[in-house]
Image (cartoon, rainbow, N blue to C red; front, top):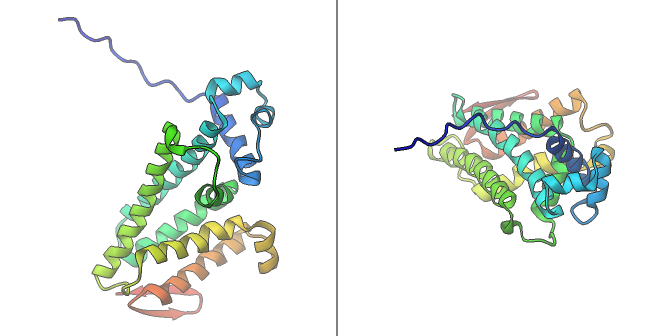
Length: 228
């Protein structure tokens, strides 16, 4: 019986494709799906339009690939936070640190995610493999944090809150915050992404959650202390 030919290593990601995704993320975050043209993306990436269409057959495919890339990075990072040892409160702290750090390291991501989650777009995401992949990534993230909240309730560490409402609150306290741009900076009276502002955001969100979630908690100064 003839043997199947041995497969070589998977091809390396194309530098051109990666560059397209990076510049497209910035543009889509700034103006949304409808506000960006493929020629603009090609120009920003330093490519001809034919080269852009070699990698992405349509703007919808590119948009969904950008979202899937952002969600993939988040999913991997947040899963490692949930897998680490510790009680539910400790793991929630790490999850929040991971989410906030990821949004700070990729500034366009927060606004892109808000647009992707809440805006109506003129295409069928399910018609593209990238759309299905992005949906799976999002479901993985939501499943992970939802499972942690339910586990904390079952163990008596968290009070009996609504998982869905708590996730909504987490999205508002993190993703919206870093997507708020000039409005947020005006409200806070300073930059959103300075080291001091980011550290303060972590403390504020953790303190808010401690009082809102924990069955019993003590809070001293600005450092939340979870107790079971």
